[in-house]
Image 1 (cartoon, protein in one colour):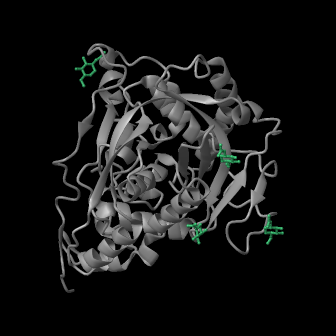
Image 2 (cartoon, protein in one colour):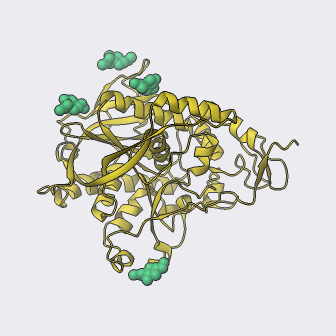
Image 3 (cartoon, protein in one colour):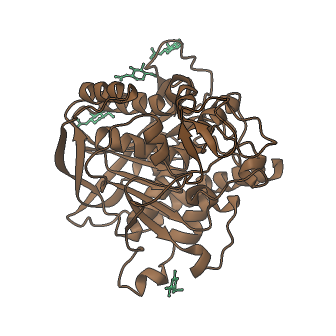
Length: 418
Ligand SMILES: *[C@@H]1O[C@H](CO)[C@@H](O)[C@H](O)[C@H]1NC(C)=O
Ligand SMILES: *[C@@H]1O[C@H](CO)[C@@H](O)[C@H](O)[C@H]1NC(C)=O
Ligand SMILES: *[C@@H]1O[C@H](CO)[C@@H](O)[C@H](O)[C@H]1NC(C)=O
Ligand SMILES: *[C@@H]1O[C@H](CO)[C@@H](O)[C@H](O)[C@H]1NC(C)=O
C-alpha cells in the first residue's frame, strides 16, 4: 500500500514536472485558433476541506515552476451544447426538499445552448484530462485569499499529495465568458491518507455502495442498514448520509463561489474519479457542461441525495476505460483491492453520455485499481490515436448511454425491520 502510494505520488509529481507545462507548450494546444476554439488562462487554485469549506488562491503571474502553465493560454475546441437547468437554484432546493419527503415537485427546467468542450475530438479530452490531473502545485507559491472565516494562511490544507478532499484549478477565457472548473477527488484508497479519510470513506461508501458498505459478513457496515439476506433498509441508507454526505454540499459551495467570482460565465466542470462523480452531480444541478474521467457510477448517489432529474443529460460526458474497476463498478467484494482498503465502490450506472475505451479488449489490459489514476488515461489511452475509433472514422469511441442500467439488482430495498 505504502509503496503504491509513493509510486503514485511520484507519478503525479513527474506529471507535474514534466508532462503538463512543457508538453502543453510543445504540443499544438497553442496555435492559430480555429473559429470554434477558446483560449483559457489559469486563474485560481481551489481546495475544499471535508467540512465543505472552499479556499481559493489566485495564481500569481511570477510562479517560476509553473509559469508556462499560468501564462500560456490553453486552446480548447468547443461545440454548441444543449443544456437544461432549473429556472432558479431556490426552486431546485425546494424540489429537493419535497422529494426528500416523498413528494414529487414539478420543476421547470430551462433549456439553453452554450459552447461546450468538443468531446468528439481526442485533443480536447487529452487537454481536459491534463488540466484535471495537474493539481500538485508548489505550496506557498500562491497568494491565498479568504472566502470564509478562520482560514489560516500558513496551513497547507488540501495541497499535500497525501491529503484528501477535493481540489483543482479554475481557468477562464480572457473575457471571462467561459470558465473551466477542474476537480480531482483524492479520497480513493490508492491515494489514501489524511486526517479526514475515515469520514470521507464513510460518506463515499454510503453514496457508492449498495447497502451501507455491507460487503460481506466480515465487514462492519457503516451503519445498520442491513436487514439479512439481500434486504436493505432504504430509509436507513439515506438517514445515514451525514449532512447529506458532505460530498454534494462541498461541490455546491465550490460552484457557488466560482459563480460569485464569475457571475456571467458559462461554467464547465471537469473531474477525475470522485471529483468526476461530483462534477456530474453539479452538472445536473446547474446545467453545466461536464466531462469526467474514470468516475464511479453516480446515478444511485443522485437518487439517494434526491436530486431532481433533468429532462436531458446530454451535457454530461463520462470518459473511462474498461480496465478500471472504479468506473466499471467492479471493485466489489471483500477481497477486492477496494474492499481491502475499506471501500465499497459498487455502483456502475452513470448519468449522461459515455465514451468508453475498451482497453480490456483492444489492449488486452487486465482490470485492476492501478489502472484508475488519470495519468494512466493520459499516457496510455488518450495520448495516441485509438484504432478502434479510427476504424469507424472517429477520433474517440462513439457515445453510448446506460439508460437501462441497474445498480445493485440483487438487493431489495424497503422499510424492513430487523
Ligand atoms: C463559498 O463557500 C463557502 C464555504 O466555504 C460558503 O459558506 C459560501 O456561502 C460560498 N459563497 C457563495 C457566494 O456561495
Ligand atoms: C485571511 O485570513 C488570515 C487568517 O485569519 C489573515 O491573516 C489574512 O490577513 C486574511 N487575508 C485576507 C486577504 O483577508
Ligand atoms: C476576469 O476575471 C478576473 C478574475 O479572475 C479579473 O481579474 C479580470 O479583470 C476579469 N476580466 C474581465 C475582462 O472581466
Ligand atoms: C476493438 O474491440 C472491438 C470490440 O470491443 C472490436 O470490434 C474492434 O475490432 C477492436 N479494434 C481494434 C483496432 O482492436
